[in-house]
Image 1 (cartoon, rainbow, N blue to C red):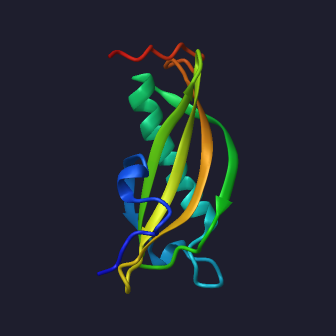
Image 2 (tube, rainbow, N blue to C red):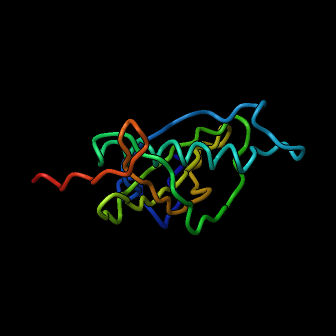
Length: 135
């Protein structure tokens, strides 16, 4: 039975924010999925986590330290996990990791990770405070 990559079990990856399948239209000339396609899914997942935490609109401010570890191939199921790691007054940093479930082998591998910074905004695009955690 295929197993997850040994350096991070699924329960430690964070919250599952997006899951999708890589398709032929998303490939580069080498037949691998474009890095930009993967980065876009990561930005979407970070946005999902940011909206949950801010309880409102967020926009991407920057992408910090992003690294590609392995290629994504056609047919792979991409799962993107998120963890809010810092919350400021109007911004937050979200750790985003992308894993694939390989189409033919069923093996799970981490393909990329990074830290994305999001800013909470009003409907008019003005930065707004992020609500404190309610416990």
